[in-house]
Image 1 (cartoon, rainbow, N blue to C red):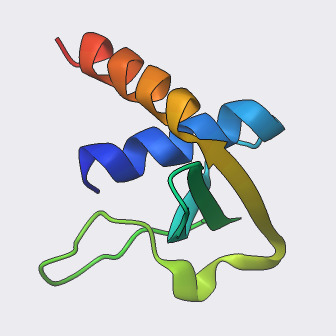
Image 2: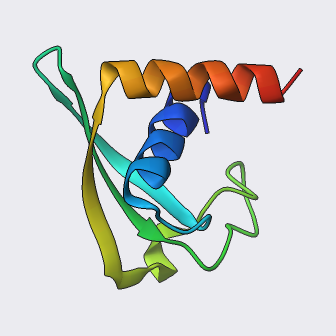
Image 3: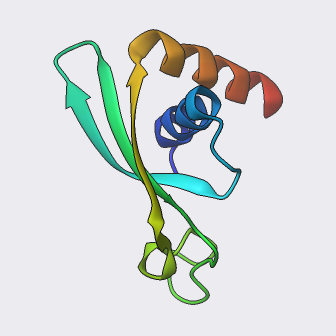
Length: 87
């Protein structure tokens, strides 16, 4: 995943205390205020092909789907924490 997708997913997890296997898969911009992140708990990773190792949303539990609004400020803070952790 790209850095900004990771930041929005991390911020959504923190806001709603979602489990570590919850990943955002749909990101909808809300007029300069932030992003509405839709995600699910993923139990498997893709095992073959160019996306090997990425979350497999086809097998995700549909009952764990959540929509979370993430403000721009929360995403920026999460992005900063991710960059510091990767150093």
